[in-house]
Image 1 (cartoon, rainbow, N blue to C red):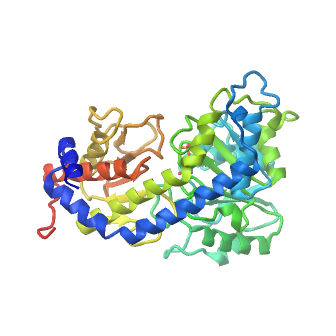
Image 2 (cartoon, rainbow, N blue to C red):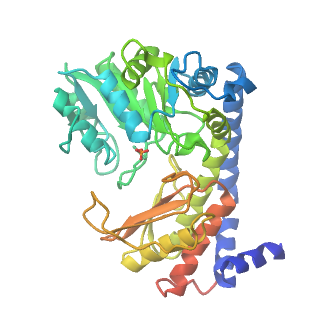
Length: 431
Ligand SMILES: *Cc1c(COP(=O)(O)O)cnc(C)c1O
């Protein structure tokens, strides 16, 4: 359709960049079809969960104060439990982010003298302070909870031998991070998580297996709770919030462990009974309803970018062909101009704050300058199209999100446009 191309021209995409994008998109038809099928399955899973929980208009009402009998909140927790096939769930605006949800799960279910174990290597950066790998006030270490980890093997496989050795009489909770986050290891498929959990349970039946599910929800038709996880945890400003949740975190799992989390979040004795939903319920429900589709759109963007930049000769992780288990895409540019141009393109394609130009800056907690691009409706939301990269070798940019495929596509083409304009990369002759 001629009209579409002219709209891209209005937004600043040249004929050459558009044509290169179009060619890449055409090669992805089959994969996009499979992604649509997963989204379709998950859409029905969520609708079924909502119908089973008898979601009604009254669930969207405003609740304030203590929040006793907050119908919307209680029913939403049932919807999450139905979707993840767990006994119970805790889904609250009082859980401020993913790190908070994970800290809650750990703090609530571990006691002094217990040991936490990660069989998949170093956890997400922010958890280092929660655990006490890096010193922090109120860390698990301060409460006498020890930590042990076994790294993945060089080829990304589980180090079963050392995992077996690491599990001891103190091991109480095993934390498994599904997404690679900002590391170079592979993201774990749900099937692999299931195999790992089976192995661990064979060694120690009563150990709690928790999965950090951030960025993984609805990427596959199964969730870690379908393959033996006792507890799955995530953020509502990533996949399950569908871009509409303005805040929040969720935990889904066995009643006993969720109860512990509720007692820790509010107070011993009060648990799930308090915590008013303060008018965010409609967005939580509608966002969860949209989440399977939104996740599929972000996934298409990630695969499109992988193929575009792989074809231009850059290292991309995951590569253009690999199966996907989360929505993060890394591209290694090998030079600062690549990272900067990419992020500036993502910013320029945003619906919000498109007129600002991101620059690298010395962000607290990082050992190099960092550049970030985000023009989001919800601050820091990473289910919305966003990118960031530290200005240091290998000069990799990490990007994720996109509420719609068309926006993700525009963002990626705009990033390429900026890089072509800056002379960082050249398009292949035959397009
Ligand atoms: C984002 C993320 C977290 C932390 O979530 P925040 O909402 O940023 O606190 C933890 N683990 C993984 C794998 C993540 O991707």
